[in-house]
Length: 171
Image 1 (spheres, rainbow, N blue to C red):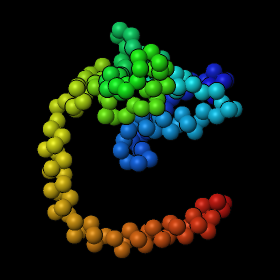
Image 2: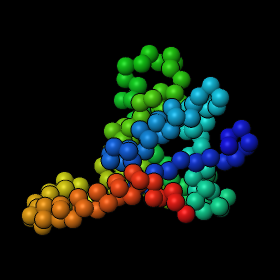
Image 3: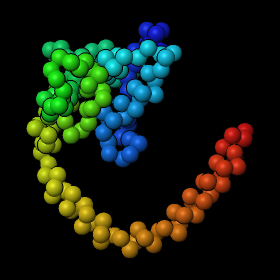
Image 4: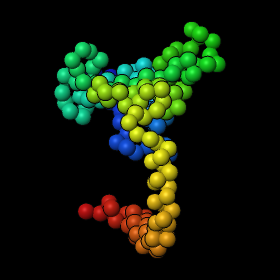
């Protein structure tokens, strides 16, 4: 797609492989899956592709660019922490970002021009209090959730049989 001049973008839609919602890790996996000898994909290409996300989702050209008057999302990484053990100017910044970036290095995040994260903290909510409240509710519902296990297991067995016998491929 890149060789054909198509705009490429990358998104998670709220789904990450190891349930940590870390888009940087998923981006790194995507890079390694596509950076083969047949596809000359450089780290800067994949990082730059993120500018096309708004266009991919909305088909609009007036958003997603870091220009005055345009709505855009932006993440700021703590590059000093990310590169603390690297000799300055010895590593290519896009390669280093793609190799090491993770949610722990997010210093700030803006969505549609609004600050959402500052100094690594989500603005406007008390994350520890929400986590405590959620844990309390989950523990209170433990018996009910556990009682649903036989139902969930029946569904899992039926799905395994359906896909295992290739029924999803029959027309």
